[in-house]
Figure 1: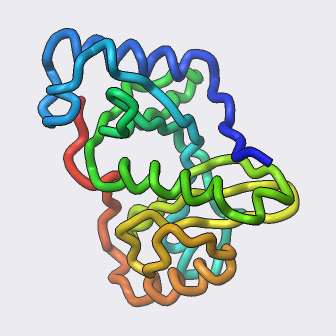
Figure 2 (figure 1 turned 180 degrees about the vertical axis):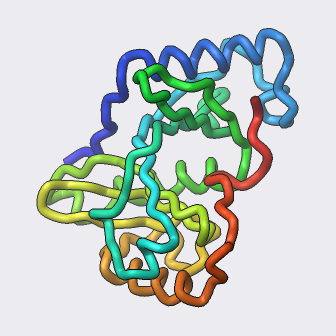
Length: 200
């Protein structure tokens, strides 16, 4: 069965595309891959909803039931190659905020993990929806393969607990993360999801 890509609110992809092409037309990207890409080659692909869990929830033993939706993320391709990601949140009135573009290491890792996930034997038995789980305090990003019957998490490289590209049951992953969360200082600052500075 296929790995299902969720359908974001209709105004979200258009906002991302419009901002992407406007910045490309004006030559306002500061990062090399986006700056050098031809505008007509830039595409927005692979939508996935972003969820996050706080450090206190992890330390207390919470699992995916504590995950909160925070926005949408896309992969940006140029000539068929993944060169960046775009993430946008929604304002309280439902309008999408301007997206942040990033060429950090998690963009390519997301594409590699999606390809690996599509080859998993479990996808022959059930359909899964593609999501993304961010735990900024622990520098972890993972694909979240969700179905009504079960969930799997695929950590993106680099991962603080290893297992990059492997499908891990949530209980196992959260057990490892809980030990790290309890060892971190309570005032540890939250960090952005993708590594590297965002592009306005």
